[in-house]
Image 1: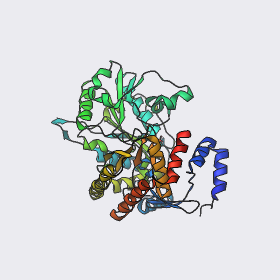
Image 2: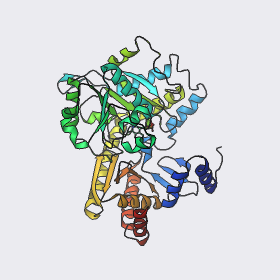
Image 3: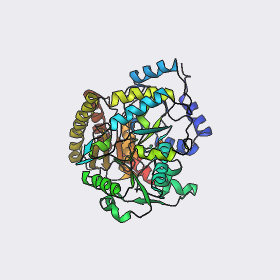
Image 4: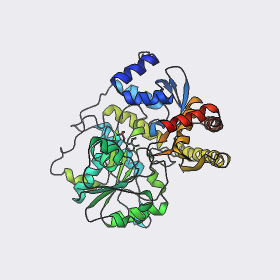
Length: 432
Ligand SMILES: Cc1ncc(COP(=O)(O)O)c(C=O)c1O
């Protein structure tokens, strides 16, 4: 049994010892939720209030909280395994790498045979896996410049931080040379930004933190062609978009391209044990020929995590599961689109499959909506780099009737916006 925490005590201890300013922000917003019990598409605040998790922690809880199949696999593994030894050869690590590569396998694409992704190195977090992707790209090309998307997000570790917006770097006085960001619309003519020193271009296949704008197919295909022609490493961050979220195992599969490196994390082990992976073409492995010990992660690919991930991957790449995600995604879209007509505050609904962004007129509207949803028992948050956008990621296991309930609560929250409480809240947010 886990200890029973009292909400007020949990908040004050957290504020005192972990994050005083964050706690203060949440308290002011009336958003001081403390997760207690959790199961399937739901979690409960310590005060007993139930939420449907429509943020899914950016895909961590794609299969719901404490998915019974993944939990069982992990429980069984605890009888035999621990994290293993990262220096040694490992059965579960090898098997998980094989399955990941199989899920990304490609043959002839757009008239050309593309080398497949066929090697994997495990890490603990998405940021760590992104850092390694950039290290591999620089090592392979001997170049130093990395291009990324303005408003994109790849984590807060060293190199991942350098690919992100200045807002996250400047307070720490960290500004690595060689990192440049390109606006979303300029990816159509990426050639203009490439220099002889460009090693890699990194992007989320659909940029979640920028509010899920979807690249046109032609843009990503052009990007693939240009990078392939110049031996620039194309890195797709599939930390949020992967593992079935968009209706394909990996979002790049909608685009008929294969990146050079794919990074995954978050939902890879069903939200039960941290693991992330950098998946790449074998040719980049040559960097380890002279000295195979130049990159190490003690907890990366822990054997317990691998067991959980194997089960998660088995579920999330099952063709029937993916078909259901695609159908539910279309269903969700058919329910969200009409809201555009009915509610002036909504200006766009974007995304793919079960990866949706609802764009509001202003960030104040979106913040007030986050609060109204929470009041109505739906947990969802705004996109941090475009706060007009509500990130809407219901668990992939949600049934049709659960999706209906979610949409009903969304409509209710939109209607509630005209109530005094939310009018006042909007005023208060403007003052914050
Ligand atoms: C697209 C994307 N890349 C990278 C990361 C960083 O992952 P982590 O927090 O596990 O380091 C995140 C986390 O939110 C993410 O959403």
